[in-house]
Image (cartoon, rainbow, N blue to C red; front, side, top):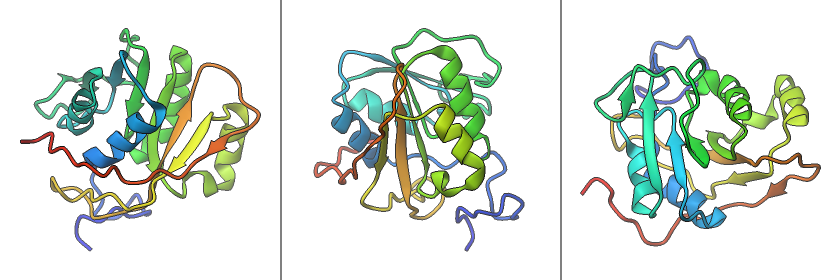
Length: 188
């Protein structure tokens, strides 16, 4: 099971930095569903730039920051303590062990945002308070298992996008997303 994403945070096979690059099709599905256009996106956990490049390939202005610099974006930027970077949206695949802190930090910035989370993220009793306090606008499970192994990450796993906009919501829209038909290799 080497390289697999495990639920046990202390496992020796788990990435110490929670670095699991996001496959472009997962990002494309979100952008296509939300019909995002003519906006600037901040990706605050950009790693090697996988999501940034996918967002740019979909026509968005995008820049990335990263705590553990990997030769892409602006390095040594701790999203949990940094100042706001001017943007319209924040879209990221946060480190799984810090997802709740990332959500809270995004709420501080008062911008719409989307987080790629494990599909069972909201299945935890300890997260009910977070859900009720900051109810998202959308929960968008992917109907396929993205392959996180393309760049040394993990094999496939079930994930979903959770989206928050700037207004409170009583009802959360739940909409499964299908895999985009046309795959554009942003690494070519």
